[in-house]
Length: 456
Ligand SMILES: Cc1ncc(COP(=O)(O)O)c(C=O)c1O
Image (cartoon, rainbow, N blue to C red):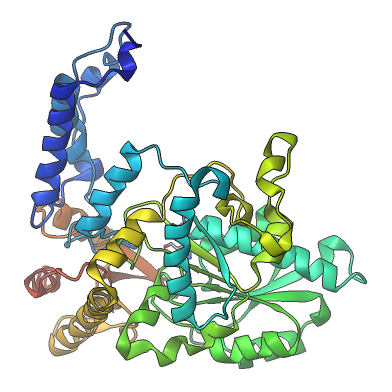
């Protein structure tokens, strides 16, 4: 008799599979209530006991008392922040990853996983126009991808500029770069050159002007562009900034965590053409590539440089690193600040292979159409105004006369009424409304209902 925690339990398995089947069959997934739901905290308090409880009982409790206290990020009516809309096949395969003990740390342990993950990474690299030989790993999110990339950028910058003291190298970013970029620079001890951008778009002209006005422009060793700003969906001047980086030997990092996926939208190919200049590029399958959390693709033009900076070395790991550069066997753990890792790229890979590229192209295109539709409806209305044109799958609009408190109350009421999850944002100091679309099944009637709810 083995240990009870490792014994197969048919009844428990059936109960869990039944729950998962029920969730998967929901169409649409209900929004639910997040923090608005009252959790029975007294019942939670007594749950952990010396002898444990039956699976069915705890699953029932979870379903009744905890699950409704989560706004389902995969509901087509989740239009706040950046949603997460995993395809059915990606969710199914996530269960395979969970149940198969699949890890994705090294080639030696997990060549099968690495082969599949690298196929998905190669697909993204090709679509970004990166050269053959580009590669990297799937990491937990855009924040981690930015941190790893900028660590490599810093070390490469230091190596290229031995005349600079190590802490004098700087990295050029725009004010609209994602908060994780600023945080990454804080972690790695690098100062930012924050480039003013008159219309929130980081262009090569803005960079040139900032460098011309700066007392120490030669300390800037890298540029961070955003391919789809989080707040407004703006794609920076990838072509201009990328060419400038190439010509001046600067590292060019593109944060496409949210918007990079739109490189697959037939209508937007040109906008992303400058991605081909990137030294490092992040795009999150857990955002607009319809994979479950947590999954970000991190790609380097020259992966050898990245693993020289980031691979962890230890006696017990030497067996993973015996091959020389020529015969390097791919260890995903070498390309970011992590070691043990879940095979988190596999749900995306499985979904991409099963549905095909065309399904991705049309689903991404649909998000862009929904933002364009919102813009039309807002412009046709007599009570709302666009703040700026819709960009990628984001629409920013205002209800003239509303205070921040009014927007907040409206947002909570929409959630309470289970209409949609829409949260306000700030734009140039003003509180406004924002839709972020990802799910291709978001219904036009929901958009109309939310806009109508802003009349009073
Ligand atoms: C442009 C951009 N970069 C980075 C991030 C951070 O990504 P994650 O939440 O996966 O860490 C986000 C998140 O929305 C983003 O939009």
